[in-house]
Each structure stands twice: as C-alpha cells, then as structure tokens.
Image 1 (cartoon, rainbow, N blue to C red):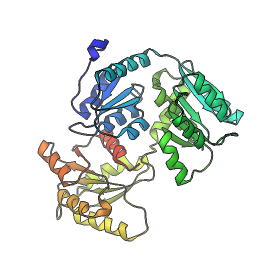
Image 2: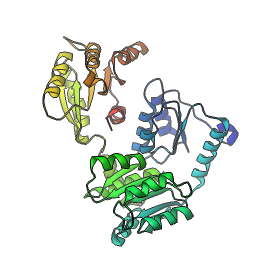
Image 3: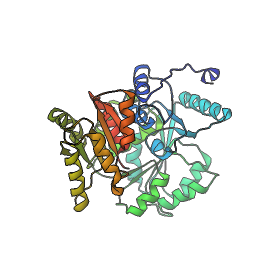
Image 4: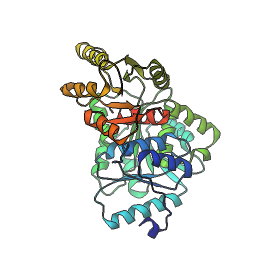
Amino acid sequence: MAHEVGFSCLIAGTADEGALLARQYLPQAVILDMHLPDHTGLSVLDRIKRDARTRHIPVHIVSADHDDHAALASGAVGYLFKPVSRDTLVDMLEGLEARMAQRLRRVLVVEDDAQQAQAIHHLLASRDVETVEVHSAAECLDSLGAETYDCMVLDLNLPDMSGLDLLERLSHDESVGFPPVIVYTGRDLSAEEEMRLRRYSKSIIVKGAKSPERLLDEVTLFLHQVVSDLPAEKQQLLARSLGRDQALEGRQVLVVEDDIRNVYALTSVLEPHGVSVRIARNGIEALGELARVADSDGSAVDLILMDVMMPEMDGLTCMREIRKDAQWSRLPIIALTAKATERDHRECLEAGANDYLSKPLDVDKLLSLVRVWMPR
C-alpha cells in the first residue's frame, strides 16, 4: 500500500532492527507496531526521539495494543488500532506525505502576560516556525476556530477562564481544532490538577530555572523539526535538555547482580541521569531489600534490573517470588540475560519479567527500556 502511494519501504521485524534502520537511513516517516518480538515498540519510539539525528522523523503507530497515551506523549504523530481499514491506512500515508511537504509550522501561545508571551516567541520562533500570541481563553477559541496550529503552549492562569476549563471545553467542541498542548505554568499543581491535565496535554512543564530548554525540547519534538536546521544557540539548549532525563530523575532502581564489574557499569550509566541505585548481590538479598521497603516509609523501588545467573537464588526464582506478592505485581522488572536464545527470553517473561536485555549491555537500549518501563 505504501508503494501504491509512492513511498519506498524499509522493513524491520524487530524493535532493535527498527531503531538501527531509522538511524542508518533517516527515513521520511516510520510506521510502528507496539507488539514486536524482542521489545515493546515504545522502546523504538524512545530511541528515535532521544537521538538528535532522528527525533524529527514522524512516527505513526499502527497496533493492537492500547498504549496510545504513552506513545502520543513520547512524540508519535498518531495512533491507529488494529484492525485498520484500507481507507484509514491510505489517509494515514497521505497525512504523512502532507506533513513532509509542510515547511512552516504554527504554534499558538496562550499566555496572559504579554512579556512572558514575547519571551516564548523569541525562544520558539524561527524561519520555519510562526508563533501566534493570544492573551485569553476567548481569543484562543476564536483563533483555533479560524486557523490550524501544529502545537499549543498554554499558561493555566488566564483572565476569563482557567486553562483546565479551556482544555475541557476544547475536548468537547468539534467546531475548533485541538492541537497537541504543552502546558507551561508558573504555579505548583495539585495531584488532582495534574491528573486532569494529563488527560488533555502532551506535556506539563512547570516554569523554572531550566524550563526554557525543556519547552524548546517539547515544541521541537511535536513540530518534528530537524535539529541540525536550528540556530546554534537553540541546538545547544536542546542538547542540554536531552542530557537531562525527566523520566529518570529522582527514581530508585534496584540492581540485582553478583558481578561487581556489571554493578559498577550499570551504576555509572544510571546515576548521571539522576537515578538512585540500590544493590543486591542475589535473589535472597533482593527479596530482603523489597521487604525493607515494604516495612519502612522510605522511598519505594521504581524498577528492578535483574540478572538471571546468580548464586544462592537465581533471577528466575527471585522474579517468581516477587510476583507472588500482590504489592509487587506491577513493579517493572527488566531481566539481564547472558544468553540471547529465544527460550531464555521466553523463560524470563514467564517468570515475571516485563522485558529483557542480553549482555553485553547496549547503553542506549538499556536507558531506553528503563525509561519505557519506569512507572509514569
């Protein structure tokens, strides 16, 4: 079907092959399944969007898995659920073609403070990006009814209506467009407000010392801008933002591994991204660490990296024990296997692992899988 519409095709049967082909050939678009034999499609999306050379490539998901919110928040341009009709697929391919042809991207900035709106304009505007500024919810609705935008940057404090109510209104109003929304706010959000916001917005950025680079990062992601085409100072801001890792900052990872060299290697990869690493040298120590977490009010373990071959209690036995306890039934576990056979991988998943990684470890793949499985 892609050939009929005029595309040439590269075909990848696994997540790793897909990430590699995207890096090697820099295709104009990617059509991605979530359910791949080696890893979830989210890991392909993450690797494409974390690499400055590939993050501009539009990725459209076509999958039976209902993981659309995570995919769209990570920068996918769309999500179709299988089974998909022929007409829908043709529309998707033609939409990708139209996106490639589009040079000028338009951003609607909804901000009541004129000075702040001007600062956002200077940060985002370029030869290929036009920003339109409005200062109230009413002006925003008028603008979305009359024009099409690729992205919207929204402040929550508006004079005539709260940003939350505006998003609610947009979600029900068919007469106006509803582009991807990046909430950029200066006030602390309550847990309830954040839950409401997550339903509508692709990203929530709280204004702060480092927020301009994060705003630039999010907007260029949703506009699918080629990083090398940006002015030098914006490329530097982006590099700074990509170096920080919002998904991993302040998270707790339990590394269960008996080889001190691997412990050191994993720690040196994770800690620069803001992760606190706890260490257990076998399955018995890992269960003891989880028991201590359950008994204390300390910070919980967010994810486990579990070696399979260990003395006293191996990783497969340990994972089965962890899954017997209801409170750990949803704790993400990534198994680290020395062998790469299909049987080993199947055994890991049957024992309770969410995913697996073969040694020697690929750093990009490791970080990608940790980001993908980290509880949101």
